Image (tube, rainbow, N blue to C red; front, side):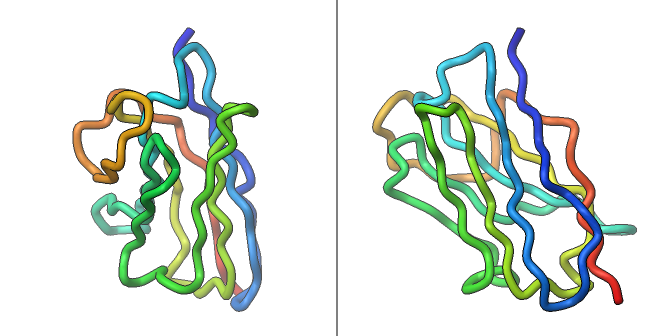
Amino acid sequence: QLQLVESGGAMVQPGGSLRLSCAASGFTLPAYLIGWFRRAPGKEREGVSCISSSGEITDYADSVKGRFTISRDNAEGTVYLQMNNLTPEDTGVYYCAARWTGRGSLTCIYSGMNYWGKGTLVTVSS
């Protein structure tokens, strides 16, 4: 069964850190770019970060640059999002999604995703 499962969401205080994980099963992760998205309360879903299938290209939304880091471990079938210096504006449900690009691709975009996880909740509050 093709599946993406997010984990690592929690409630943290402003300035805190979290590491989200996106575990893939049922498909060949090295052939897919992975994107992290979030939906904040009352807002549209937005792309936060992506990583190409090759792992060489990453992209970040302006609002998280310098604070979030995306990485992938294809051997483990997992993509991570390290989030530091969190603010209340980072609160939301975080989703990972996969788009087929083939192995070794340098493509990193936020559209045309083939698979989506169900999300993990991040709450930043004092």
